[in-house]
Length: 489
Ligand code: URP
Ligand code: ZN
Ligand code: ZN
Image (cartoon, rainbow, N blue to C red; front, side, top):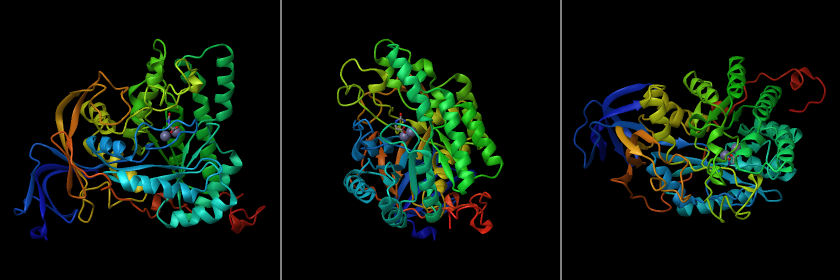
């Protein structure tokens, strides 16, 4: 078996969620074929001595080449976004195919496929954003799209252009249960936010810092609570995106403890920033404007605890890059109110270095937990494991040679995305990706991206066990009990 390797990654400390060991990795035709203390020489060799060898990161929440509900285009297309991801040690993205109202979901997904296939340098999949769940979309288009390997649906409870009401949420969740698809949700109560926005703008409180004020924490708490109830009502697994509050994490903890299939993520911005980040002169605070907004130091600490105890399964970037100019954040003109500024920050490239530095180097997380949060659990959650997110025989050889001692001072020019700024400028990070392999091909080495545009491939996803209903329906919805309408029959 070992003799058949055409590439050996030699002498590194291989880390999986299960532990770490000094091992050689044998690779053939892009897949891992051997893991041994010592493998015979191969045609090609990569010296990993002194380096950690980690599974390539999976960023399961990032916006690439997507038009926002406000009509602003992401700064990154699939070329710059995927190159930036690769430099940061991420070898798979799950970004979005975003339906705007009136559009055919089938046509939207086909369009994203075409653009990603032509440009992405890493492997990719899509969550389908549903904003217009018509009969045709739910009953004709969606079943075929799920069958074709798009096993997850993203819904919004807020933003005027994207939000679904409770009835629509239930419609989509019931359909997802039937199809075995995962539901992912941006959870904030829209009415509470709109109520705040109206009063703030009416009082001329228009600067970026009021963005944080306009999204009260109870808007998130209320929406998470409601989603957990809906999930229990229909027995439909739900992943709650970008949890920002201690109370939100606590609701997830309780739901999971009671056996519900609730999963959740947070993002580096909720671990690194507080609402004070937006409190800067002029429009500068817009560079830290994202939704939900950053909260308080105590929330960040609660989120770290939730990562350690398994309440939160993944750390994603929620990369939503907009340039700080008239093509992006300032599209509405030079003096916009906070409500006219696109929400989102870049994060694809620094996701792993940020979490490694503040998590592993600072002693909050073990390296095994880091791997689980950034690669293995996202792969499981979205039906990519064991092909992705792990270092085992048969898996794709997506590997990152990681220098745990390297310190980098982040500057606006450090990253390779097209945003033009990073909200993390000035921070010193300890631990950095050095060499990146995608399916056995070296795609980042010596500070250069070597991958060809369009060499990334689409990853069809069979719905995994995380997306499967538990079979524990509530009395109201259980057709076997014949209570009320047989809504799931
Ligand atoms: O501010 C954010 N997160 N923008 C991207 C869209 C979303 O809400 O995920
Ligand atoms: Zn969101
Ligand atoms: Zn997002």
